[in-house]
Amino acid sequence: MSELSTIEIAGLHKSFGALEVLRGIDLAVEPGEVVCVIGPSGSGKSTLLRCVNLLEEPSSGTIHVAGVDVTDPDCDIDAVRRRIGMVFQQFNLFGHLTVRENVTIAQRRVLKRGRAEAARIATENLERVGLVDKAAAYPAQLSGGQQQRAAIARALAMDPELMLFDEPTSALDPELVGEVLAVMRGLAAEGMTMLVVTHEMAFAREVASRVVFMDGGVIVEQGPPEQVFGAPREARTREFLHRVLEPTRVSEAEIRGDDV
Amino acid sequence: MKLSRRRRQRIVRVAGYIVFALVIAGALGAADWGRLSEAFFRLDVARSMFPEAITVALRNTIVYTLLAFVFGLTLGLILALMRLSSILPYRWVATAYIELFRGLPALLVLFMVGYGVPLAFPDREIPGGVYGSVTVGLGLTAAAYMAETIRAGIQAVPKGQLEAARTLGMSHVRAMISIVLPQAFRIVIPPLTNEIILLTKDTSLVYVLGVTPATIELTKFAGDALNTRVNPTPLVVAGLLYLVITLPLSQVVRALERRASRER
Image (cartoon, rainbow over all chains, first blue to last red; front, side, top):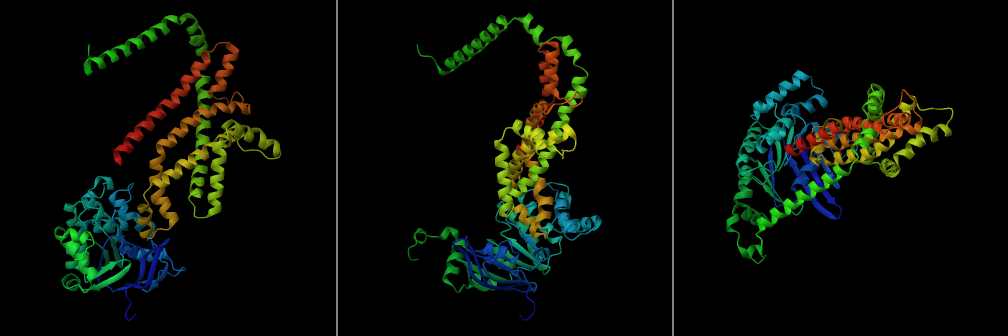
Protein backbone atom coordinates (compact mmCIF):
# COMPACT_ATOMS: atom_id res chain seq x y z
CA MET A 1 0.00 0.00 0.00
CA SER A 2 1.53 3.26 -1.06
CA GLU A 3 -1.19 5.62 0.01
CA LEU A 4 -4.06 4.23 2.02
CA SER A 5 -6.51 2.68 -0.44
CA THR A 6 -10.17 2.86 0.47
CA ILE A 7 -10.58 -0.82 -0.35
CA GLU A 8 -7.74 -3.28 -0.69
CA ILE A 9 -8.73 -6.85 -1.54
CA ALA A 10 -6.08 -9.55 -1.79
CA GLY A 11 -6.48 -13.23 -2.71
CA LEU A 12 -10.19 -13.28 -1.88
CA HIS A 13 -11.91 -16.66 -2.13
CA LYS A 14 -15.52 -17.39 -1.19
CA SER A 15 -17.34 -20.70 -1.35
CA PHE A 16 -20.93 -21.58 -0.58
CA GLY A 17 -20.59 -25.26 0.27
CA ALA A 18 -19.01 -26.93 -2.72
CA LEU A 19 -19.72 -23.95 -4.97
CA GLU A 20 -16.73 -21.66 -5.31
CA VAL A 21 -18.14 -18.24 -6.15
CA LEU A 22 -14.99 -16.13 -5.83
CA ARG A 23 -11.73 -17.70 -6.97
CA GLY A 24 -8.94 -15.31 -6.11
CA ILE A 25 -9.85 -11.63 -6.35
CA ASP A 26 -7.29 -8.84 -6.06
CA LEU A 27 -8.74 -5.38 -6.30
CA ALA A 28 -7.94 -1.94 -4.91
CA VAL A 29 -10.26 1.05 -4.88
CA GLU A 30 -8.59 4.41 -4.31
CA PRO A 31 -10.24 7.38 -2.59
CA GLY A 32 -12.59 9.22 -4.95
CA GLU A 33 -12.69 6.40 -7.48
CA VAL A 34 -15.93 5.12 -8.95
CA VAL A 35 -15.41 1.46 -9.79
CA CYS A 36 -18.17 -0.30 -11.70
CA VAL A 37 -18.23 -4.10 -11.60
CA ILE A 38 -19.95 -5.71 -14.58
CA GLY A 39 -20.34 -9.31 -15.65
CA PRO A 40 -22.89 -12.06 -16.22
CA SER A 41 -25.21 -13.31 -13.46
CA GLY A 42 -23.49 -15.75 -11.17
CA SER A 43 -20.07 -14.29 -11.86
CA GLY A 44 -19.64 -13.36 -8.19
CA LYS A 45 -20.08 -9.57 -8.50
CA SER A 46 -22.59 -9.22 -5.68
CA THR A 47 -20.72 -11.67 -3.48
CA LEU A 48 -17.57 -9.60 -3.94
CA LEU A 49 -19.43 -6.47 -2.89
CA ARG A 50 -21.01 -8.20 0.10
CA CYS A 51 -17.62 -9.43 1.26
CA VAL A 52 -16.37 -5.85 1.54
CA ASN A 53 -18.64 -5.12 4.52
CA LEU A 54 -18.67 -8.74 5.63
CA LEU A 55 -22.31 -9.50 4.84
CA GLU A 56 -20.60 -12.59 3.47
CA GLU A 57 -17.69 -14.09 5.35
CA PRO A 58 -14.74 -14.65 2.99
CA SER A 59 -13.38 -18.20 2.87
CA SER A 60 -9.83 -16.91 2.53
CA GLY A 61 -7.95 -13.78 1.59
CA THR A 62 -7.86 -10.33 3.17
CA ILE A 63 -9.93 -7.20 2.78
CA HIS A 64 -8.80 -3.85 4.14
CA VAL A 65 -11.26 -0.98 4.27
CA ALA A 66 -9.58 2.37 4.95
CA GLY A 67 -6.68 0.51 6.49
CA VAL A 68 -8.78 -1.73 8.76
CA ASP A 69 -8.54 -5.46 8.15
CA VAL A 70 -12.22 -6.48 8.17
CA THR A 71 -11.27 -10.16 7.81
CA ASP A 72 -9.48 -10.00 11.17
CA PRO A 73 -11.78 -11.82 13.64
CA ASP A 74 -10.96 -9.17 16.25
CA CYS A 75 -12.05 -6.29 14.03
CA ASP A 76 -15.09 -4.32 15.26
CA ILE A 77 -17.20 -4.90 12.18
CA ASP A 78 -20.05 -2.65 13.37
CA ALA A 79 -17.59 0.25 13.58
CA VAL A 80 -16.29 -0.44 10.07
CA ARG A 81 -19.80 -0.78 8.63
CA ARG A 82 -20.68 2.68 9.96
CA ARG A 83 -18.16 4.06 7.49
CA ILE A 84 -19.47 2.03 4.54
CA GLY A 85 -22.84 2.93 3.02
CA MET A 86 -24.65 0.16 1.17
CA VAL A 87 -27.55 0.28 -1.27
CA PHE A 88 -29.37 -2.93 -2.12
CA GLN A 89 -31.17 -4.16 -5.20
CA GLN A 90 -34.37 -4.64 -3.17
CA PHE A 91 -34.02 -1.24 -1.39
CA ASN A 92 -34.57 -2.86 2.03
CA LEU A 93 -36.16 0.22 3.53
CA PHE A 94 -37.56 -0.47 6.99
CA GLY A 95 -41.25 -1.07 6.27
CA HIS A 96 -42.54 -0.10 9.71
CA LEU A 97 -40.84 3.32 9.70
CA THR A 98 -41.51 6.47 7.72
CA VAL A 99 -38.94 7.73 5.23
CA ARG A 100 -37.68 10.25 7.78
CA GLU A 101 -37.42 7.59 10.50
CA ASN A 102 -35.58 5.33 8.07
CA VAL A 103 -32.99 8.06 7.64
CA THR A 104 -32.74 8.97 11.34
CA ILE A 105 -32.89 5.64 13.17
CA ALA A 106 -29.26 4.59 12.65
CA GLN A 107 -28.05 8.15 13.27
CA ARG A 108 -29.81 8.06 16.62
CA ARG A 109 -29.13 4.47 17.65
CA VAL A 110 -25.65 3.98 16.19
CA LEU A 111 -24.04 7.40 15.97
CA LYS A 112 -25.97 8.59 19.08
CA ARG A 113 -26.83 11.89 17.41
CA GLY A 114 -29.43 14.05 19.12
CA ARG A 115 -32.98 14.20 17.81
CA ALA A 116 -32.61 17.67 16.29
CA GLU A 117 -29.27 16.96 14.67
CA ALA A 118 -30.47 13.67 13.20
CA ALA A 119 -33.58 15.38 11.83
CA ARG A 120 -31.51 18.16 10.28
CA ILE A 121 -29.13 15.70 8.60
CA ALA A 122 -32.09 13.62 7.43
CA THR A 123 -33.65 16.67 5.81
CA GLU A 124 -30.37 17.58 4.11
CA ASN A 125 -30.01 14.13 2.62
CA LEU A 126 -33.66 13.84 1.63
CA GLU A 127 -33.27 17.19 -0.13
CA ARG A 128 -30.27 15.88 -1.94
CA VAL A 129 -32.24 12.92 -3.33
CA GLY A 130 -35.36 15.03 -3.91
CA LEU A 131 -37.63 13.38 -1.35
CA VAL A 132 -38.23 16.01 1.36
CA ASP A 133 -41.94 16.06 0.51
CA LYS A 134 -42.12 12.27 1.10
CA ALA A 135 -40.49 12.36 4.55
CA ALA A 136 -43.71 11.38 6.32
CA ALA A 137 -44.62 8.61 3.87
CA TYR A 138 -44.12 4.90 4.50
CA PRO A 139 -41.98 2.92 2.06
CA ALA A 140 -44.99 0.99 0.74
CA GLN A 141 -46.47 4.32 -0.43
CA LEU A 142 -43.46 5.13 -2.62
CA SER A 143 -42.48 4.06 -6.12
CA GLY A 144 -39.43 1.85 -6.51
CA GLY A 145 -37.33 4.77 -7.67
CA GLN A 146 -38.37 6.85 -4.66
CA GLN A 147 -37.67 3.94 -2.32
CA GLN A 148 -34.20 3.50 -3.74
CA ARG A 149 -33.46 7.22 -3.44
CA ALA A 150 -34.65 7.11 0.18
CA ALA A 151 -32.32 4.15 0.75
CA ILE A 152 -29.44 6.19 -0.64
CA ALA A 153 -30.33 9.07 1.68
CA ARG A 154 -30.42 6.63 4.61
CA ALA A 155 -26.88 5.46 3.81
CA LEU A 156 -25.57 8.99 3.20
CA ALA A 157 -26.91 10.24 6.53
CA MET A 158 -24.21 8.16 8.24
CA ASP A 159 -21.49 10.21 6.48
CA PRO A 160 -19.87 7.15 4.86
CA GLU A 161 -16.40 7.27 3.39
CA LEU A 162 -17.39 4.68 0.83
CA MET A 163 -20.61 3.64 -0.86
CA LEU A 164 -21.39 0.13 -2.09
CA PHE A 165 -24.18 -0.24 -4.67
CA ASP A 166 -25.49 -3.75 -5.31
CA GLU A 167 -27.40 -3.60 -8.60
CA PRO A 168 -29.32 -0.54 -7.38
CA THR A 169 -31.52 -0.23 -10.48
CA SER A 170 -32.13 -3.89 -11.33
CA ALA A 171 -35.46 -4.11 -9.48
CA LEU A 172 -36.80 -0.87 -10.95
CA ASP A 173 -39.27 -0.31 -13.76
CA PRO A 174 -37.31 1.06 -16.73
CA GLU A 175 -38.76 4.57 -16.47
CA LEU A 176 -37.56 4.87 -12.83
CA VAL A 177 -33.94 3.92 -13.46
CA GLY A 178 -32.92 7.40 -14.53
CA GLU A 179 -33.79 9.17 -11.27
CA VAL A 180 -31.64 6.76 -9.24
CA LEU A 181 -28.72 6.98 -11.65
CA ALA A 182 -28.97 10.79 -11.51
CA VAL A 183 -28.49 10.72 -7.73
CA MET A 184 -25.55 8.34 -8.09
CA ARG A 185 -23.99 10.50 -10.80
CA GLY A 186 -24.26 13.49 -8.49
CA LEU A 187 -22.55 11.56 -5.70
CA ALA A 188 -19.72 10.55 -8.01
CA ALA A 189 -19.27 14.16 -9.11
CA GLU A 190 -18.90 15.19 -5.45
CA GLY A 191 -15.99 12.79 -5.12
CA MET A 192 -17.65 9.94 -3.20
CA THR A 193 -15.70 6.68 -3.40
CA MET A 194 -18.08 4.17 -4.95
CA LEU A 195 -18.02 0.45 -5.75
CA VAL A 196 -21.00 -0.26 -8.00
CA VAL A 197 -22.25 -3.63 -9.23
CA THR A 198 -24.46 -2.76 -12.18
CA HIS A 199 -26.02 -3.84 -15.44
CA GLU A 200 -26.32 -0.22 -16.57
CA MET A 201 -23.56 -0.12 -19.16
CA ALA A 202 -24.28 3.48 -20.16
CA PHE A 203 -23.83 4.54 -16.53
CA ALA A 204 -20.59 2.59 -16.19
CA ARG A 205 -19.26 4.02 -19.43
CA GLU A 206 -20.08 7.58 -18.44
CA VAL A 207 -19.45 7.74 -14.70
CA ALA A 208 -16.92 5.03 -13.83
CA SER A 209 -13.28 5.88 -13.37
CA ARG A 210 -12.60 2.17 -13.77
CA VAL A 211 -14.62 -0.78 -15.04
CA VAL A 212 -14.04 -4.29 -13.72
CA PHE A 213 -15.34 -7.22 -15.75
CA MET A 214 -15.89 -10.42 -13.74
CA ASP A 215 -16.76 -13.88 -14.97
CA GLY A 216 -16.61 -17.24 -13.22
CA GLY A 217 -15.43 -15.80 -9.91
CA VAL A 218 -12.37 -14.01 -11.24
CA ILE A 219 -11.61 -10.55 -12.59
CA VAL A 220 -11.18 -11.11 -16.31
CA GLU A 221 -10.30 -7.59 -17.27
CA GLN A 222 -10.29 -4.10 -15.82
CA GLY A 223 -9.42 -0.63 -17.00
CA PRO A 224 -10.84 2.76 -17.86
CA PRO A 225 -14.30 2.55 -19.44
CA GLU A 226 -13.05 3.67 -22.86
CA GLN A 227 -10.73 0.70 -22.89
CA VAL A 228 -13.05 -2.00 -21.50
CA PHE A 229 -16.02 -0.90 -23.60
CA GLY A 230 -14.10 0.46 -26.61
CA ALA A 231 -11.32 -2.06 -27.01
CA PRO A 232 -11.81 -5.07 -24.71
CA ARG A 233 -8.74 -7.30 -24.70
CA GLU A 234 -10.38 -10.54 -23.59
CA ALA A 235 -12.68 -12.67 -25.73
CA ARG A 236 -15.02 -13.25 -22.76
CA THR A 237 -15.41 -9.51 -22.25
CA ARG A 238 -16.15 -9.00 -25.94
CA GLU A 239 -18.78 -11.75 -25.91
CA PHE A 240 -20.46 -10.39 -22.77
CA LEU A 241 -20.55 -6.82 -24.09
CA HIS A 242 -21.88 -8.05 -27.43
CA ARG A 243 -24.73 -9.86 -25.69
CA VAL A 244 -25.55 -6.99 -23.35
CA LEU A 245 -25.12 -4.04 -25.67
CA GLU A 246 -26.52 -5.63 -28.84
CA PRO A 247 -29.12 -8.13 -27.59
CA THR A 248 -31.06 -8.00 -30.86
CA ARG A 249 -28.00 -9.05 -32.83
CA VAL A 250 -27.25 -12.24 -30.88
CA SER A 251 -27.51 -15.04 -33.43
CA GLU A 252 -29.09 -18.44 -32.89
CA ALA A 253 -25.77 -20.05 -33.68
CA GLU A 254 -24.22 -18.31 -30.66
CA ILE A 255 -26.79 -19.49 -28.14
CA ARG A 256 -26.42 -23.05 -29.42
CA GLY A 257 -22.76 -22.75 -28.53
CA ASP A 258 -21.54 -23.16 -32.11
CA ASP A 259 -18.36 -21.41 -33.08
CA VAL A 260 -19.13 -17.82 -33.91
CA MET B 1 -86.98 -33.15 -21.95
CA LYS B 2 -83.58 -31.51 -21.82
CA LEU B 3 -83.19 -28.74 -19.30
CA SER B 4 -81.03 -25.73 -20.05
CA ARG B 5 -78.17 -25.12 -17.69
CA ARG B 6 -79.78 -22.05 -16.26
CA ARG B 7 -83.08 -23.84 -15.59
CA ARG B 8 -81.33 -26.71 -13.94
CA GLN B 9 -79.39 -24.38 -11.64
CA ARG B 10 -82.57 -22.57 -10.69
CA ILE B 11 -84.37 -25.81 -9.81
CA VAL B 12 -81.46 -27.00 -7.67
CA ARG B 13 -81.31 -23.71 -5.82
CA VAL B 14 -85.04 -23.55 -5.14
CA ALA B 15 -84.99 -27.17 -3.93
CA GLY B 16 -82.15 -26.23 -1.56
CA TYR B 17 -84.14 -23.41 -0.01
CA ILE B 18 -87.22 -25.63 0.36
CA VAL B 19 -85.27 -28.34 2.20
CA PHE B 20 -83.75 -25.72 4.50
CA ALA B 21 -87.15 -24.20 5.30
CA LEU B 22 -88.69 -27.62 5.98
CA VAL B 23 -85.91 -28.62 8.39
CA ILE B 24 -86.15 -25.34 10.30
CA ALA B 25 -89.93 -25.47 10.45
CA GLY B 26 -89.80 -29.09 11.61
CA ALA B 27 -87.32 -28.24 14.37
CA LEU B 28 -89.36 -25.24 15.52
CA GLY B 29 -92.55 -27.25 15.53
CA ALA B 30 -91.06 -30.19 17.37
CA ALA B 31 -89.44 -28.07 20.08
CA ASP B 32 -91.19 -27.78 23.40
CA TRP B 33 -90.98 -24.02 23.78
CA GLY B 34 -92.36 -23.88 27.26
CA ARG B 35 -89.87 -26.42 28.54
CA LEU B 36 -86.99 -24.78 26.68
CA SER B 37 -87.53 -21.29 28.01
CA GLU B 38 -88.25 -22.71 31.47
CA ALA B 39 -84.87 -24.50 31.42
CA PHE B 40 -82.54 -22.13 29.64
CA PHE B 41 -84.09 -18.69 29.71
CA ARG B 42 -85.41 -18.15 33.25
CA LEU B 43 -85.06 -14.40 33.63
CA ASP B 44 -85.30 -14.51 37.43
CA VAL B 45 -82.45 -17.02 37.59
CA ALA B 46 -80.39 -14.95 35.18
CA ARG B 47 -81.09 -11.77 37.12
CA SER B 48 -79.99 -13.34 40.39
CA MET B 49 -76.51 -13.90 38.91
CA PHE B 50 -75.88 -10.19 38.51
CA PRO B 51 -73.94 -8.09 39.24
CA GLU B 52 -71.44 -10.77 40.45
CA ALA B 53 -71.43 -12.43 37.02
CA ILE B 54 -69.75 -9.33 35.69
CA THR B 55 -67.99 -7.74 38.65
CA VAL B 56 -66.41 -10.99 39.83
CA ALA B 57 -66.70 -13.84 37.31
CA LEU B 58 -66.25 -11.98 34.04
CA ARG B 59 -63.60 -9.76 35.59
CA ASN B 60 -61.59 -12.74 36.86
CA THR B 61 -61.88 -14.51 33.51
CA ILE B 62 -60.40 -11.45 31.82
CA VAL B 63 -57.70 -11.03 34.48
CA TYR B 64 -56.66 -14.71 34.23
CA THR B 65 -56.56 -14.42 30.45
CA LEU B 66 -54.41 -11.30 30.46
CA LEU B 67 -52.01 -12.60 33.12
CA ALA B 68 -51.50 -15.91 31.30
CA PHE B 69 -51.18 -14.06 27.99
CA VAL B 70 -48.50 -11.67 29.21
CA PHE B 71 -46.60 -14.52 30.88
CA GLY B 72 -46.94 -16.71 27.79
CA LEU B 73 -45.99 -13.90 25.41
CA THR B 74 -42.84 -13.06 27.35
CA LEU B 75 -41.76 -16.68 27.66
CA GLY B 76 -42.82 -17.33 24.07
CA LEU B 77 -40.66 -14.47 22.78
CA ILE B 78 -37.66 -15.80 24.71
CA LEU B 79 -38.28 -19.31 23.36
CA ALA B 80 -38.66 -18.02 19.80
CA LEU B 81 -35.35 -16.17 20.02
CA MET B 82 -33.72 -19.27 21.52
CA ARG B 83 -35.16 -21.37 18.73
CA LEU B 84 -33.50 -19.06 16.18
CA SER B 85 -30.25 -18.77 18.13
CA SER B 86 -26.96 -19.78 16.56
CA ILE B 87 -26.11 -21.55 19.83
CA LEU B 88 -27.17 -25.17 19.48
CA PRO B 89 -28.09 -25.94 23.14
CA TYR B 90 -30.49 -22.96 23.14
CA ARG B 91 -32.21 -24.39 20.08
CA TRP B 92 -32.40 -27.81 21.75
CA VAL B 93 -33.94 -26.46 24.93
CA ALA B 94 -36.48 -24.33 23.07
CA THR B 95 -37.46 -27.15 20.72
CA ALA B 96 -37.81 -29.61 23.60
CA TYR B 97 -39.94 -27.15 25.57
CA ILE B 98 -42.22 -26.41 22.65
CA GLU B 99 -42.71 -30.07 21.73
CA LEU B 100 -43.37 -30.97 25.39
CA PHE B 101 -45.93 -28.29 26.21
CA ARG B 102 -47.72 -28.48 22.88
CA GLY B 103 -48.16 -32.17 23.51
CA LEU B 104 -49.59 -31.96 27.03
CA PRO B 105 -53.22 -31.14 27.88
CA ALA B 106 -53.55 -27.69 29.47
CA LEU B 107 -55.49 -29.28 32.33
CA LEU B 108 -52.61 -31.63 33.16
CA VAL B 109 -50.16 -28.71 33.26
CA LEU B 110 -52.55 -26.77 35.47
CA PHE B 111 -52.79 -29.72 37.88
CA MET B 112 -49.01 -29.97 37.90
CA VAL B 113 -48.55 -26.30 38.73
CA GLY B 114 -51.46 -26.14 41.18
CA TYR B 115 -50.88 -29.42 43.07
CA GLY B 116 -47.80 -31.22 41.80
CA VAL B 117 -45.28 -28.47 42.43
CA PRO B 118 -46.67 -27.48 45.89
CA LEU B 119 -46.54 -31.16 46.94
CA ALA B 120 -42.94 -31.45 45.78
CA PHE B 121 -41.84 -28.17 47.35
CA PRO B 122 -44.08 -27.62 50.38
CA ASP B 123 -41.84 -24.86 51.74
CA ARG B 124 -42.06 -22.76 48.56
CA GLU B 125 -45.09 -21.35 46.88
CA ILE B 126 -45.91 -19.56 43.66
CA PRO B 127 -46.49 -15.89 44.53
CA GLY B 128 -49.92 -14.43 43.93
CA GLY B 129 -51.96 -17.41 45.15
CA VAL B 130 -54.51 -18.65 42.60
CA TYR B 131 -53.64 -15.75 40.29
CA GLY B 132 -50.00 -16.78 40.26
CA SER B 133 -50.79 -20.46 39.70
CA VAL B 134 -53.15 -19.62 36.83
CA THR B 135 -50.60 -17.29 35.23
CA VAL B 136 -47.97 -19.99 35.24
CA GLY B 137 -50.27 -22.96 34.70
CA LEU B 138 -51.96 -21.58 31.60
CA GLY B 139 -49.03 -19.43 30.48
CA LEU B 140 -46.61 -22.36 30.21
CA THR B 141 -48.79 -24.01 27.58
CA ALA B 142 -49.63 -20.76 25.81
CA ALA B 143 -45.91 -19.91 25.60
CA ALA B 144 -45.24 -23.02 23.53
CA TYR B 145 -47.83 -22.04 20.93
CA MET B 146 -46.86 -18.38 20.92
CA ALA B 147 -43.15 -19.24 20.54
CA GLU B 148 -43.91 -20.99 17.27
CA THR B 149 -46.10 -18.10 16.09
CA ILE B 150 -43.45 -15.50 16.94
CA ARG B 151 -40.70 -17.58 15.35
CA ALA B 152 -42.70 -17.74 12.13
CA GLY B 153 -43.24 -13.97 12.35
CA ILE B 154 -39.53 -13.27 12.77
CA GLN B 155 -38.72 -15.54 9.84
CA ALA B 156 -41.34 -13.78 7.72
CA VAL B 157 -39.43 -10.49 7.99
CA PRO B 158 -37.28 -10.39 4.85
CA LYS B 159 -33.59 -11.12 5.43
CA GLY B 160 -32.70 -7.84 3.72
CA GLN B 161 -34.16 -5.91 6.67
CA LEU B 162 -31.59 -7.36 9.05
CA GLU B 163 -28.83 -6.92 6.47
CA ALA B 164 -29.74 -3.27 5.92
CA ALA B 165 -29.72 -2.65 9.67
CA ARG B 166 -26.36 -4.39 10.14
CA THR B 167 -24.95 -2.44 7.20
CA LEU B 168 -25.83 0.79 9.01
CA GLY B 169 -23.64 -0.34 11.88
CA MET B 170 -26.32 -1.71 14.20
CA SER B 171 -25.36 -4.70 16.34
CA HIS B 172 -27.39 -7.89 15.90
CA VAL B 173 -29.29 -7.23 19.12
CA ARG B 174 -30.02 -3.60 18.23
CA ALA B 175 -31.20 -4.63 14.75
CA MET B 176 -33.52 -7.25 16.24
CA ILE B 177 -35.00 -4.76 18.72
CA SER B 178 -35.36 -1.77 16.39
CA ILE B 179 -36.01 -3.37 13.01
CA VAL B 180 -36.93 -7.06 12.99
CA LEU B 181 -39.12 -7.57 16.07
CA PRO B 182 -41.43 -4.57 15.46
CA GLN B 183 -42.16 -5.91 11.98
CA ALA B 184 -42.46 -9.49 13.20
CA PHE B 185 -45.05 -8.48 15.81
CA ARG B 186 -47.08 -6.66 13.18
CA ILE B 187 -47.20 -9.91 11.24
CA VAL B 188 -48.23 -12.04 14.22
CA ILE B 189 -50.88 -9.80 15.76
CA PRO B 190 -53.76 -11.75 14.17
CA PRO B 191 -52.54 -15.22 15.29
CA LEU B 192 -51.67 -13.83 18.74
CA THR B 193 -55.18 -12.44 19.07
CA ASN B 194 -56.47 -15.92 18.27
CA GLU B 195 -54.24 -17.14 21.08
CA ILE B 196 -56.00 -14.74 23.49
CA ILE B 197 -59.34 -16.22 22.42
CA LEU B 198 -58.08 -19.74 23.12
CA LEU B 199 -56.69 -18.62 26.49
CA THR B 200 -60.00 -16.99 27.40
CA LYS B 201 -61.70 -20.34 27.01
CA ASP B 202 -58.91 -22.22 28.80
CA THR B 203 -59.48 -20.10 31.92
CA SER B 204 -62.57 -22.32 32.42
CA LEU B 205 -60.10 -24.98 33.64
CA VAL B 206 -59.08 -22.81 36.57
CA TYR B 207 -61.82 -24.23 38.84
CA VAL B 208 -59.69 -27.35 39.41
CA LEU B 209 -57.38 -25.19 41.54
CA GLY B 210 -60.19 -24.76 44.05
CA VAL B 211 -61.20 -21.15 43.64
CA THR B 212 -62.82 -19.00 46.33
CA PRO B 213 -65.83 -16.72 45.81
CA ALA B 214 -63.36 -13.90 45.19
CA THR B 215 -61.30 -15.71 42.58
CA ILE B 216 -64.14 -17.50 40.78
CA GLU B 217 -64.36 -17.31 36.99
CA LEU B 218 -67.29 -17.61 34.58
CA THR B 219 -67.57 -21.39 34.13
CA LYS B 220 -67.27 -22.28 37.81
CA PHE B 221 -69.58 -19.39 38.69
CA ALA B 222 -72.20 -20.72 36.26
CA GLY B 223 -71.68 -24.26 37.51
CA ASP B 224 -72.30 -23.19 41.12
CA ALA B 225 -75.41 -21.29 40.13
CA LEU B 226 -76.60 -24.35 38.18
CA ASN B 227 -76.28 -26.41 41.37
CA THR B 228 -78.03 -24.00 43.71
CA ARG B 229 -80.90 -23.09 41.36
CA VAL B 230 -81.14 -26.55 39.74
CA ASN B 231 -81.66 -24.78 36.43
CA PRO B 232 -79.36 -24.55 33.39
CA THR B 233 -80.04 -20.85 32.65
CA PRO B 234 -76.69 -19.82 34.29
CA LEU B 235 -74.84 -21.82 31.63
CA VAL B 236 -76.49 -19.73 28.91
CA VAL B 237 -75.60 -16.53 30.75
CA ALA B 238 -71.97 -17.61 31.10
CA GLY B 239 -71.85 -18.58 27.43
CA LEU B 240 -73.13 -15.16 26.41
CA LEU B 241 -70.54 -13.46 28.63
CA TYR B 242 -67.73 -15.49 27.00
CA LEU B 243 -68.99 -14.29 23.65
CA VAL B 244 -68.84 -10.71 24.96
CA ILE B 245 -65.06 -11.24 25.19
CA THR B 246 -64.36 -13.42 22.19
CA LEU B 247 -66.62 -11.98 19.48
CA PRO B 248 -65.04 -8.50 19.52
CA LEU B 249 -61.61 -10.16 19.50
CA SER B 250 -62.42 -12.18 16.41
CA GLN B 251 -63.69 -8.99 14.78
CA VAL B 252 -60.34 -7.38 15.60
CA VAL B 253 -58.49 -10.35 14.06
CA ARG B 254 -60.60 -10.12 10.90
CA ALA B 255 -60.04 -6.35 10.60
CA LEU B 256 -56.29 -6.74 11.13
CA GLU B 257 -56.09 -9.51 8.54
CA ARG B 258 -57.99 -7.37 6.04
CA ARG B 259 -55.61 -4.49 6.65
CA ALA B 260 -52.55 -6.72 6.39
CA SER B 261 -53.71 -8.13 3.05
CA ARG B 262 -54.18 -4.59 1.75
CA GLU B 263 -50.78 -3.34 2.88
CA ARG B 264 -48.52 -6.03 1.45
